[in-house]
Image (cartoon, rainbow, N blue to C red):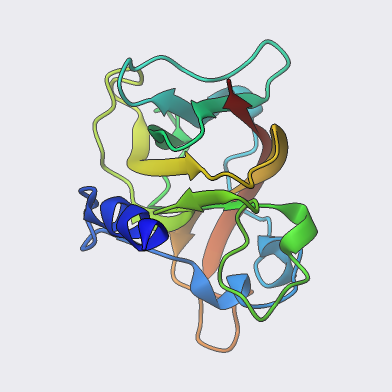
Length: 200
């Protein structure tokens, strides 16, 4: 019963469902990343112009560490909300992405194609993936082409002390052709390491 209450609490957290939806087709397969279906042929190649950030929603502070990874830390049972920020710097000659897709995934669970949940075992989550149209205003990145969505996690009693996951990202323009995902859409693929820590 307690687990049901937690899941209901996570579901009740305000998420703009009209503007965000999951890249669900690939998630249900055993593909290791987006490039199993899509091309990495987009114009966003310069790493310094690509925005991939995770902010603590309560403080607005970036959770990026000195080594380039991100650290999300929470006590057991605590609801921790972060903002996933994806986008590109506004640069002359570089088009803005139209839609950004991202997925938090435990690489060890990718082969579990029977489950939609590829998140780290022991952690509850309300929005581990999304595909969102660019246009969110983010104070940390004024004037840039960004998307921003909250994600709330909760470390359960069985969550390990330290867990490492991947944040897989695609910036895209255009629309994929049905049954031909390598046609009609440009995309640039990126990957980041996100560490989850249970605090005592």
